Length: 229
Image (cartoon, rainbow, N blue to C red; front, top):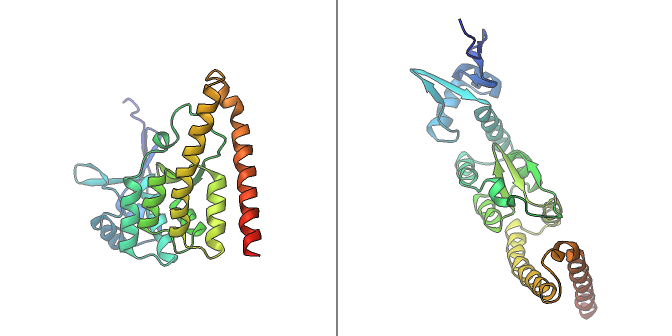
């Protein structure tokens, strides 16, 4: 008989073409939950439907990752309704390839996070509303079971501001306003260069634009702080 790439084990799981699949009982055991809880999650659409072969339902690593995320979020105080809304927002989020663009030059380093790692960064403030706002800004995309933040610097700054007591919703609101000004500054710099240099010089000269903006922002903060004094 030809080897079809399927290898079964004694625990109800199997390897098919490099993909690990589980029956319901094994999946529940690996996730540390009961079969009854797994059925409940499936009925609540907290996990995607399994792949079926006749009357047998097969689950894969994506289901296991989602179940572990649900457990981690429950431990952090999220409700099942909140988790369902978060899962729906993630499922509707843009793919990371669409978010970053193909071949787009960037100085920013994307960060891969699990949903529970994102929740830990912004303890108690990863709500469906904040998640949707971050996705609308283009900060977050999805890559399978992981979330991708478009910029490590922005992620670090926003999480630091939240730890300092500023609500995440207000941080995202300010980010939206900053984005509008940043787009206007980028357009100003681009138009300035293109009036006097070829388009290929834009990437080479972009550090100059960043230096101007950083210096002007520093001076503006100095002026604001001196007025308060």
